[in-house]
Length: 309
Image (cartoon, rainbow, N blue to C red; front, side, top):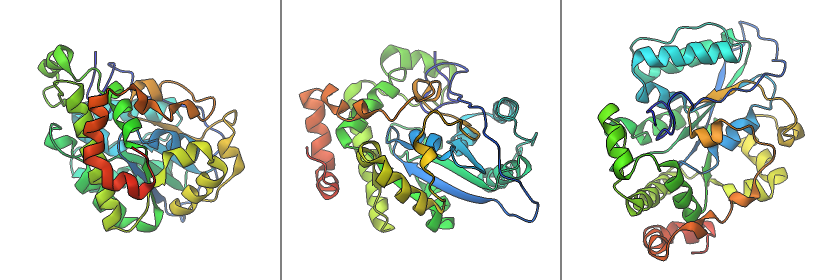
């Protein structure tokens, strides 16, 4: 089964991932919390980056917290935060009952401060366009969040073929008859009639994200560079977020600071043991027609980023 609690959900109650903490930095009330953002299309490596950043002292790393506000009814969001706070030892802090994303953002910063952290990193995914329900469209919100933290935001992108192939897997419970059945229970879940619809949406969403990146004149970090050359790409990523890079971020035996949130259970429920280079090239799983559809939509942006089609 599936739930709207996670990004295009995959199993009820399973889109949560929590790791035990390493010692936090000392917190003083006079130190304000600084928030940074990691933004990219779904399946572009944002969850991996969130996990890596949780290896820094004093950092609370949350996966798609603003999606929780949109995807869950108030009672369920409160239950989600109670569980998160209990599992990773955060201070008991009650989310707002109303007030929208501004009030929710203030809550997240209060939670971060009360729990002894000085930095909050929020990983969010760019989602826009049909057939997504309007409430799942995050582009306007992410524009606003980035505008408020332009010097503390990093953007991620992945080869469009690999993004499309991985998105098919992510949305496997939101298509065909399974997706229709789930919509009976959760009416605002997105529904994709077939694989080709998923591929077209992923490609258009990918282009929309890059058009925005061009508008704000911020080149994204390529997922492939992050995976193949982490010693070079992760320091750049930290610099864009206003964080000090530490080599132990790339040591997966190092315990993480608090890390949890929403996402694909296949990613969130497993503790990474290494950066998986095998994830590069998954676009080979696409059919010839699917690759042609993606290429027709993304060609200009792909060439600008050095992605062969």
